[in-house]
Image 1 (cartoon, one colour):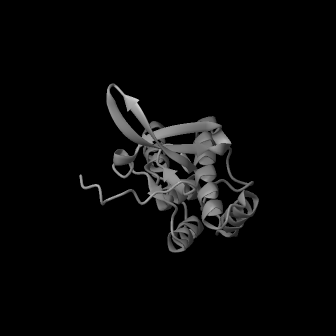
Image 2: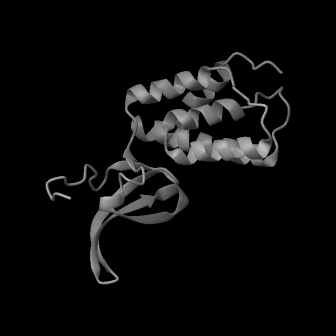
Length: 172
């Protein structure tokens, strides 16, 4: 690995870590682990009161990425507007797929989960696990939309909510 390929991530950058969503790089530090000196990104997930240390050379490999571009965000919003696609597979199978999409760190995939699990007030109740997945996906989506547009989570939540409520009701 050439030293010239210094990481594209810098302290204070917001990044998306697939398994945890949006975090902010607090610093880059060196730590000796088992006799090897490693360079680590220190990423803070403010909302979850969690700090993660990720070896800089592994960051891209594990899917850490910069925030989505405005284009991707608007694509995600278009995805939300679409008609929910609910497969007739068993719930455990679907739940697994939703979970994979949420943890992929891919904003469009996350928007698909939000779209597919969103329930209007007049629709049938969600099961506990459906609601958990929906809320996890919604939170990831909202946080990234907020971070890309300057950090106002309430405005981002309203934006996402407006898109969801403007959708044509799914056929029951």
